[in-house]
Length: 262
Ligand code: NI
Image (cartoon, rainbow, N blue to C red; front, side, top):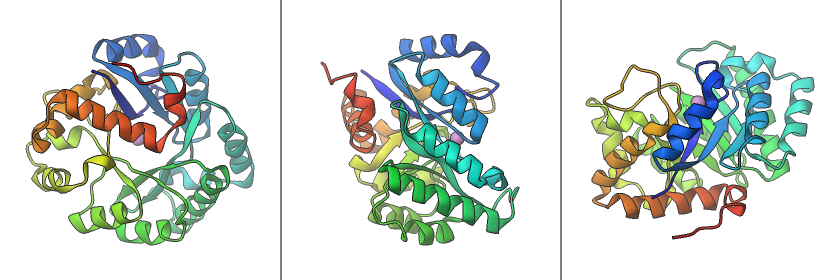
């Protein structure tokens, strides 16, 4: 069985110093593809650099809403240049964060629009970060009908999920689905279409049960898969086939060097 961690931060200081060991443990768990998510310019550059080191690794580039004020014309030009790299498969993580509100909302909107425009120009999907801003965020996504992507670490309501799915977005499901108090998320996952779910760890954050609160790693992805498989009444083999096909559909470059085999 093979899995893809569609959202991890091997480029984060908690994982970067031992990224080779982290990758090795992931591969031992069947996690054969890892998509490393940028969140500011330096981390985007590190993601691309890591993706050059192994055929298992891919990168995204983008400015997180918490750092929206860094999204200057110079930064955008650099992101555009990075997005041309053959190992870059999406723009992200980008979005709106009204929970931490670390950047003025005006700057968040400006950075979000600029990076959605970049994704549209480049024909790349987007990796969306959203905290307590689903309604305004979905209003923005509606303005870019040609852009597709994933609502990473989905934490909205059933109505938000329906709206995102109707726009063609995938839901990124991670460790939270294994938490005792996540009944509402599990109900959403149970009801959602099987061809729209992407598995992710968000490592080093949000470790699944029984590692909750500890440093997360891509090697824990199968614990998340187990939760989803039981919600859907599927075997792990069946879930693996479904979720691998979903990754290939949204990020087709990642499938090129690793043709499906049995
Ligand atoms: Ni993340």
